[in-house]
Length: 396
Image (cartoon, rainbow, N blue to C red):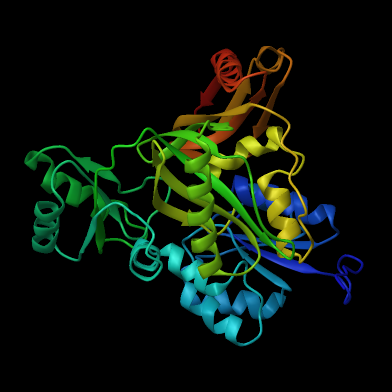
């Protein structure tokens, strides 16, 4: 029987978030709805989830010794990775010692590294992917580009939010793409993946929930990325019945192999009825923020419910919805979201301001959500609200 005792007592339930950005913040809120004690961790102070957690720790989560120290200090019932930049070998050790990692330590380890998840999907599970090669130095890289052909996509095997990603459109781009990948990798210079360019009609995130009830799917989320980072998403993305069935089959095959309970963001390319696997995140997905307005349980509520061992018998979809990310550029710790009375004046519009403490370069700081009779109308409504927003970037 599933049970949760009084918060912050010996019979209570404690969750430790490894990563405390806007996605972690929403997971923390949903966990607290069940009376769970939340401890938020990140590499910088005053991260969004830290602002509402019971306690927080600031440290480099790639530091395995420090990661172990914090976990042994807190002794959480659930360790919840919310970012990729974590010393995942330590999580595997701790899981073997009896700690509970969401969804599993192996899933966190495989998906942190693009090589691990690509080899699992393509070589072990036989899932269709784009053609690919890996390279550890510049000579291997040039050979990989030659074998895959131009155009092709280059990514560090360890990075997120589009960092280090580029497209080679001609031989003149090869040297610069290598440089971009080496500068953008999470762990500094290192190994890269070269992927064949996939001609697709659209790409989706299929949010897939594994719980004690079995496997459940949200309506497919369509999205647009710029420089590898999401800007727009909508739900549902129109698909043929055959394409949707193939997407669900691929998602189940990959998530079953990763195991555990929680939500997975399975990224797929679709051309007609053909579905091609791209990547998977074993946690809520940024494109899935649209579910905060489109469903009775957002992706964050689903993640919390599943990882706590609670059933997810069904997901009620309310109707066509859209999200529009608010990306701010500058170098400041003082930002004002202005003209909000106009942003929120139209029926069916909501907004989430993440509360990130500063911007250096560009950073996603908020999201606008909208719902309407059709996906097109919802997207247009979100864009109208976005165009009314004024962002004041003040000097430090």
